[in-house]
Length: 178
Image (cartoon, rainbow, N blue to C red; front, side, top):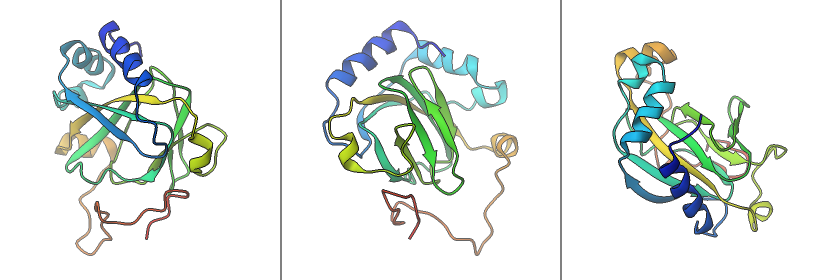
């Protein structure tokens, strides 16, 4: 999906100045953008588009080890890649690998362990990303209301279910929990 020119330009500038530390996803600032909101709403199903929060956040990474974003509560998390090399968002527990090149976006449960890896990499290894170019993402959130839960098949957790939190240890190389 083609982003508005202003967002594309901003993403390119952020990529040039992105933090050099590989393996971590770095926040590069919060903002609102009406043009970006309109483009995202147009590509989301109407029932989801209405749940898009107006605040966005820039994220940059030079590959990212497995982690959760458990600090995002009661939302589905979206990452729209606007700059950088073709990589994949990899979900450790399911083995799902989603292409993530400029223009691609992915919406997922922020509590699910995930990483940003080069396409041929089965695991995260920091050394591989030391001199790697940065990927720049526009992050967005969808309110996790009943209609979205139904659309994505998300049930309320069982009272005795294991719960992932921001304190849950995730192996950065493999995505294993604990």
